[in-house]
Every structure is written in C-alpha cells, then in structure tokens.
Image (cartoon, rainbow, N blue to C red):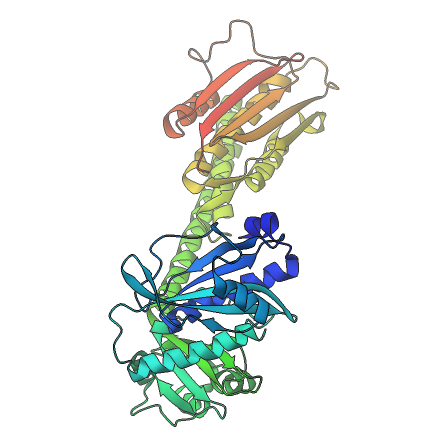
Length: 490
C-alpha cells in the first residue's frame, strides 16, 4: 500500500498512518457487514481511483473472487466512488450489480481525516442466499452502520489507538453491544459462553458488564478500577485482560459515536485460557532449559578445576601442558553453555562468545602482553548445536597461532598480532585466523603428523559442522593463515 500511495496519490505521511490505523481494524467492519471492503484512493492527477487494499469477511461469502489491489478505474466509471469523494457521504446503489451470476449490493464510504476525504471504501455484499436476518445479524449490521458513519465523519479510527495484542479478539469470538450506560443490549451466543466459563449463570442482556466482571473476577486478576470501568463501560478504545484461576479472557472495546455523541460500544471478547496455559508451559520450558545449561556450565567448570589441581601435582612438563590444554578446551565449551543459560532462545550471539574466548587465550598464553589478539567482522547469531564445536575450533586456532607463531621466538621482546575475522555470506560463515609470527614450517601437511589441536579442529569442521578447513601462509607478509568455512542457518 505504501508504494501505491507514494506512486499514484498526493497523500502525505500522516494520511498514510491514518489509513494504516483504519486497516488494522477494518476486518471488524468487514465481518460485521458480511461484506468485502476495498480501499480506493484518488489519483493525484484526478484521473480516477487506485485500489490499494482489500479485505474479505470471515462471517459470510465473498463478493469479490479476484484480488483487485493495484487496479485502476477511471473517473466516471464507478459513480459511487466519484459521488462519495465529491459529496462526503455514504452512497448506495439502488439495484444490485451482477458479478459472475451473483447479485452484489455496492456501497461507498468516504474516509475522512481532518476535514478532507482522503479515500473511499467500496463495500460489496454478496446477496446470494440472503434470508431474514437473525437478531445476531441485525446487531452486527447496526454496529457496522455506526462504524461506517464514524469513518465517514473522521471519528474512526481513533488516532494513536491500535491493538498491539496478537490475541486480540475477532467478531466471531464473542460480540457484545452495550448501551451508553454500560448495560448490555445484546450478547452473541459465543460471548455468553465465555462469561459462563467465568461462572455467570443466566443471560447478559440488561446486565452492567463492569459490575458483573467485578463480581466474577478477583481484584488481583483484573485491571485497575478506572481501566475496568472505562473498558467494560464502553468509554475507552483499548484492550484489557481479566482472568480467574481457571479462565483468561481478552476484551476489546470500541466506543460508538456515529453522530458525535456516545451511544454505546462494541465489545469483542475471546477466551484465551489455552493460549495462556501454553505460554506458561513455554516459560517453564525455557527456564528449565536455561537451568540445564547453567548446571552443565557449573559441572564443566568443576571438571576444569579438578584438572588444574591434577596438573599442579605432576612434575612432568609435557603432562602438565596436556592437562592445561584440556582445561582450556573444557573452558571454551563452558563459555557457550554460560551464554545459553542467559538467553531465552536456543541461539547464541557468538560475538560475545568470541570476545570471551579471546580473553581466555590471552590469559593462558605464555607470550603475555607481547601478543595482541583481536576479532574483526561479525559472527552473528549461531544455533546452539553449531556454537559448541565452533567455539572449540576458534579456541584451538587462536591458541595454535599464539603458541606456534610466537611461543618460542628468539627475541623475548618481539611482538605480534593474531586476528580472527568472521564474515557471513549466502548462508555460510567464513572465519579467517591469521598471525604475523614465524609461519608454518616447511613441508607442513594438515593431513599428516598434525598435533592434537589441529586434528580436533579438522574433525569438528569437516565432520560435525559440515564445512571446509584451509591453511597456508599469510598473503601480505610472514605468518600463517587458517580458513574455516561452514554452513549456518540464515
């Protein structure tokens, strides 16, 4: 719609916001009218009208089989559109139109904002099989008439009021029409069923809805008194939720002022008990998963501490170094689980993990402050099943670059840098670890005779992550270069 408005009309940004507010709620108008709605906007050159949006009813058959969004009709081709724009009032055809052997009643509703008609809604009702309307249908149609008069008078939608609740009720969930004093004039069977689940026995007609809700819902499970009176009394355009220990209900109120004065309100309500129960189950599940990650992290840290104690009691340097490497590897896995214990999703912001891995490598490095280890680019969000092996791969490559690139330099004052660069392109993550140290030894072969660290890296990259591992000399100077290329979810 935004593109059509920009390309073909002279409406400004505030007009567009008004139309978007209206169309956020015009499903209600379509359902109450049992009719299709099409938004037509006048062309900036006065040549005709552009269809920018369309809505079909869920309460009755459609009158428009095909989508018409993007269509253009010339001025004079649809007299009802021209008349509503010119005269600023609702117009209706005397005789129905026939479309695909279906009789259709067509009406036009001017959309007014700030004293200007910025568009026209064409309302088309399929008359096939029309019968004597029931009390429910008459109540729907009466309320639809009030809403359309408010649209034509610039009183609907209400500026700044838009339902932000994804569970907002629809007409078929439960319909209540209240008088100006807050007493129920009519309640649909679904609405009556909802209140019976709350514990009400009997009809709702003539009942003050706010007083009834106070009697059925404990104070701790309902909004404050001012909100309760405003919403259930039909005076405030907003949502509210009330609940007992067994039932949860969302209510939505639209005050009706078809002629300027408050005549009552439309209240829609929906039983969301099952949705709230599932929400609670998801919250409990998420908390359980986070607690598991927290406990795994604690257990890994305990294992690392035991390995450190064991290393201190060993005199053999090679054995002590091997245990130290094991501590580091366990620590890299613990960092991932600690990160997962702090988030709701089973995805990891790996840039935070990488930052901690860099600090860990620096802390355990024998090269001390002579070496700068830093990250560039961005890893982004990584699924948890990828994060753990990737953390070990990055740790091993960084540690390998520090130890073998700078660990035994003849000059104790020599310095250098290790850089880990991460980029995501077309569903793949490419990580390049480079150092400006002594570089790889002559004849180095990743396939034969590699140390345990690179063996772990290759196994994880190729088998567990389904990626590729490349190695070579740094392109712009001395040093080594390892490239990890793995697929990741978008």
